[in-house]
Image (cartoon, rainbow, N blue to C red; front, side, top):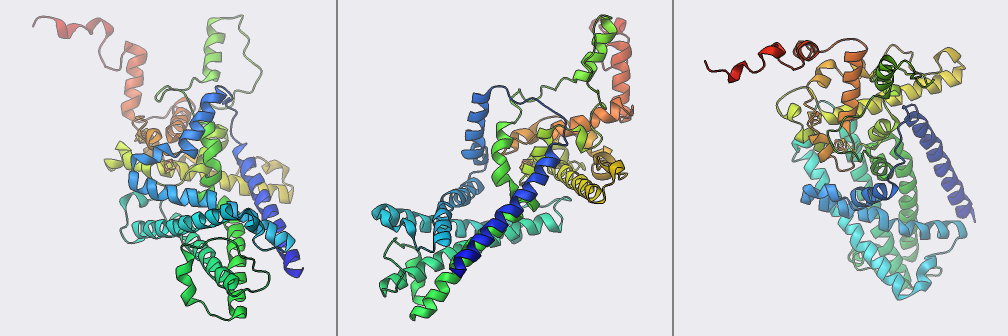
Length: 439
Ligand code: SF4
Ligand code: SF4
């Protein structure tokens, strides 16, 4: 009875803490501007099923895709077993689904194969990151925390899978010696090889089985509450992120409604602009971006596929699209903390959370970075979960040009030429066909 009460208390605390942190993340995402992504629901659903659920874009790199798929399948399928753990924990039963007979045996057997698959995949991932030191996992933005974050999760998954298999091995031995409460259920094709290293005494086996059971479920709760602080939030956000992703052809720029309204008002005196506050042109800070941009930032897995194909980054420029996403997330988190502090101190004046003298552009992302982008869309094409770093870069550039009249000299000259000559070159329109004249 004590263990049931303890289990229920831990479960409620874990769920409450996660809900509290999730609410804050959603609050931060809602700081973004409105954008309508309610169109084409069927196409959106198909995109989500293909890209997030089916992981189709991952398979451009088959080896990591295969390993990632095992971890992903393991995560989804083995956690069905969590349902049994939950029911057993609440009602004090043991292997409640054991009555399903052969179906249960097949289920536990396949969980064990998946568990060992996840274990091996995580070890390979650790080797790729820490021993082979693949270039994709390095970069100025990959400071000690992002590197540790990836390692922590891989090590946790290895420990969880080890606990799961050890628990099963001890359970199978307890079933074999007819220990009370341990009903005969399940098949153990992988964990049977661990049985020889376990003790033979009933009390020793019960201690190991219970210890692993508690470690497994507390580990899952800890993992759940670690997600909001980690790039592994993508296991939740990948689904809404792909559903709400941009379905327009790549390279098609978004129209700025505020500019359209201004032009219409100039050309048509009868046009009345909508009352809505136009805000600033482009984005200076995270609240000038739209909410999908902000959700993108929380979803980024920091995999670096975007940066590895970015021509600016490849040719040694400062720009890294992964850093753009990580900076956006960091700034959003900072604004969120400002909001929490303001709410705590009831500081009405600072209630927006942005009055800290910082901004996304300049404090986090430099002008050199945004102007290094060629707008090629290679990053959006490469991203396995349809994140769009280019749209953030574009908004920051729009702010620099339209609010501050600042742009690199080469671009200012080109804009001036377009304005004066109707073309990016320095020639008068009258001289445009000089090249075709006989010399
Ligand atoms: S669109 Fe910009 S950031 Fe993205 S890959 Fe091309 S140059 Fe790099
Ligand atoms: S934006 Fe996409 S491709 Fe780039 S690091 Fe994030 S998840 Fe990976």
